[in-house]
Image 1 (cartoon, rainbow, N blue to C red):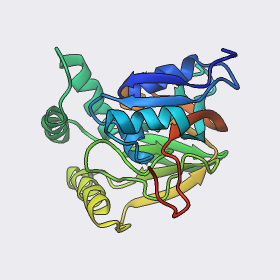
Image 2 (cartoon, one colour):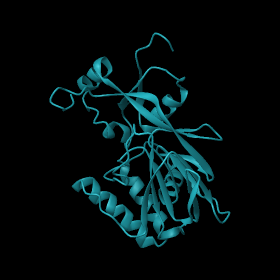
Image 3 (spheres, one colour):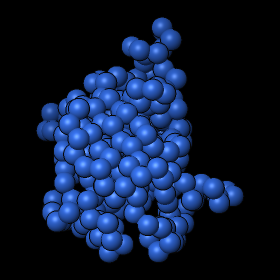
Length: 254
């Protein structure tokens, strides 16, 4: 793709994942023109919402050298997050039933339905070659602080530090899943890093997850369904460029 200064992609996080997955190594940076449901990437880098502001980003924005998770067997890429367990189950259920455009309130409905009807899986977790547990109920492997809607599960995640932040929920009750969501909402609105018992956080360059009891455990990548466990993701630092707002002398963005 020599000769191009940038590639613009209009859509949601899944669309930008597809654009990034199709670019060759050393390809031009991507400018996200957000028009999806959650637009997590756009919120993470504070993209402007106006057409004029996005035009400025395309014309003179700064390139953020973004880490990408790459699945070692399939080559599937993840810019934002990979997860297995409760939220991935919701994503799979919802995408099976959807008949048109997605709205955030629909995720809430399927989220409640999944909490009521589904039992926690047993997920094996290995980080950088060290086994952490064989009975995790939910695992989020993240490159970003934010999640869909008013949720912040991994407040210390950064897209350019060469590491995933890995959240592991060890407690297995339905109440524990609900508490996880309340924690994420409070973190988002207050800027706190509220801690819960039964939840651990880890930095890792390579993450291997598997189903410990043979049960099919769904996986989601950047908000889209992506098969079932096992997966084996490794960080590739600075693999793609993402255009963000230019930083001014005062430290702000425009």
